[in-house]
Amino acid sequence: MTDTKAAKVVVACTLAQLVVGPITLRDLRRRDAAQVRGPKLLWRLWAGSNLFGAATYWAVGRR
Image: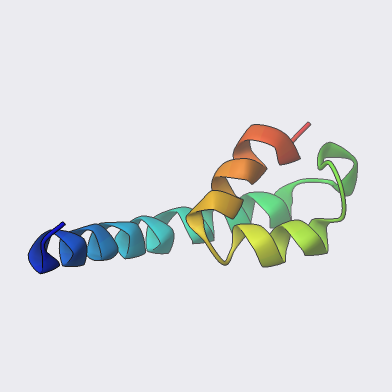
């Protein structure tokens, strides 16, 4: 992969995290603890820090 292509991938992932992260954290804040699999604090830390964590929350963490 060339340097320019790698830079574009990094920028795209960063922009995606800047959009998906706050949406995920807002959903966690509004959702009752009974509607979340596992501790909400753990999901906040993991889902707010990277795209894989956010995707996992949307796929697995919500009841």
